[in-house]
Image 1 (cartoon, one colour):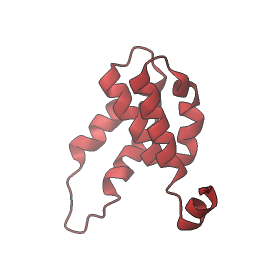
Image 2 (cartoon, rainbow, N blue to C red; image 1 turned 180 degrees about the horizontal axis):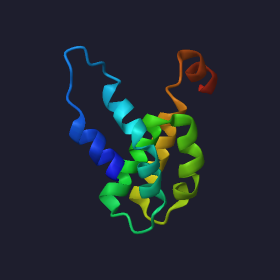
Image 3 (cartoon, rainbow, N blue to C red; image 1 turned 120 degrees about the horizontal axis):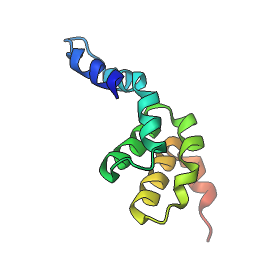
Image 4 (cartoon, one colour; image 1 turned 120 degrees about the vertical axis):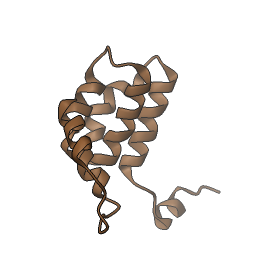
Length: 103
């Protein structure tokens, strides 16, 4: 968590800051966020935030990390994982939606 704290304490938005700038900061904290998700002692609110962050930072890798938590006995955690996995998979395009329609 020290890397995230250090990065956030030094960050100041610039006039030319892009919308991705906060994600770049979180990218630096990836190992810390993964550690939070894998630690059984992480407080639930922090765990839920970490689950959501994984899907935003590295969607392709998030699924591999979150798969075990998707069957959690805690419904809120399982739902957060399922939401994160859906976000990581990306939005369906119109063609995908049409393929799913069954009459």
